[in-house]
Length: 255
Image 1 (cartoon, rainbow, N blue to C red):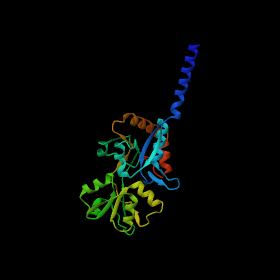
Image 2: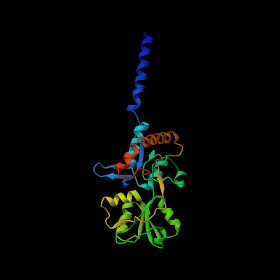
Image 3: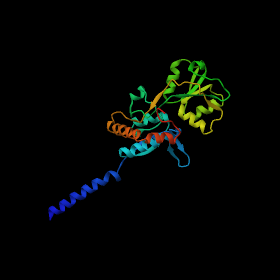
């Protein structure tokens, strides 16, 4: 009788263990930003962060077996929040750079692009390179790879640093900046939506600060990094990544 009860108890325990992962999935905090449309932005209708990187990390979580909790914050606070354990993952329009790789680890690249050049709409010149703006005052977003790269050229009279890309667009449109440099897809999307009528994207300009976006994790968190990379590869292969890009008006890589 005792043996039968022990067998029943063991079977019940195994059955409970089998359903536990579905009902008690690990919840990981994901740092993202409200100003990187279409990669990440605040949807005022739902008061939640939406966009390419939110869709991507959500699908990765589904595939890898964890839930995601999006934590909105300034772009410049993302890495510090990750290293101080306030978040577990960064999923934003963040370039994989050598300097950042010294502090955090990145997934395999997800999307590659360069900077866009913004000028006032009244400025019709076809700029092609930095030297065309020699001695001028330009702007870039704090925390991005563009700031140091622009300063190191020694080409510009001043490189002003802004908290958000919309702030750059406003100052360019108002004539307070000769030009602004920012993530091409983000700027193109903003302008396509009809905002910031005083600024234009210079199509003749050739980007020089091209980089790849990746998902960030804490140094040494190899188990999580392996899960993310495995799922990312699977989502690329089955077309999920292309569907996400298409949803937000971005071209598939290589298209």
